[in-house]
Image (cartoon, rainbow, N blue to C red; front, side, top):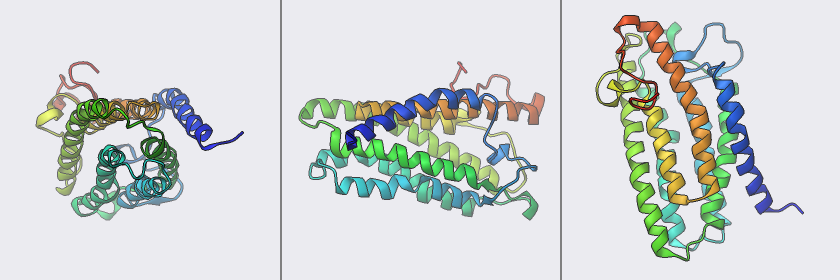
Length: 262
């Protein structure tokens, strides 16, 4: 018989299952937005700030809707646990698009970046599925009986999550700062950019590792695994793009996403 628990488990299984083909496909195809946009792209496009706000929006409104009907909605620990998730996606849904809108300065109208609508819709659908399992776990299925164990996992995971978010937001700021100069792409410098080409992706991967530790759930693990499957290949594509564009001027000791490793 169909039930909420069956749906919850099915979506977790589906996201885990899709991680492998996503990783494989990303070896041959890089989503055409940002520095990978192609002039031959066809189809409807929207502005990047609008695309990011649209894609990430389910993580906010769906969270509040799910919490309204969760059996743990009276338990303050559920609100403590969901707060890092909300904090991250408030940044991605509202603050980052505003920074992108006001901080980007294209060289000309022709050079203005556009975001394919089909990719934005795909991201929107993924965030509906992922937000459902993350928020449903926290608001309904998580066990808060052992307070001591909860705080050990939460505090340990929060340290990892916070470190990743600091890196993610800082790296986004560096890249937006280069865009605001309006002189085209330049080699990012300073901090973790001296070690990897995409510290913004490294930061996000670390964030969701922290979330998986905080929730100690299959839902959190599925989110972390899919994040790696999606972002690691894109970071490798970014690294190759920098090497092709800047050639000998690009630092040879930089890795794609994991310092000293890959």
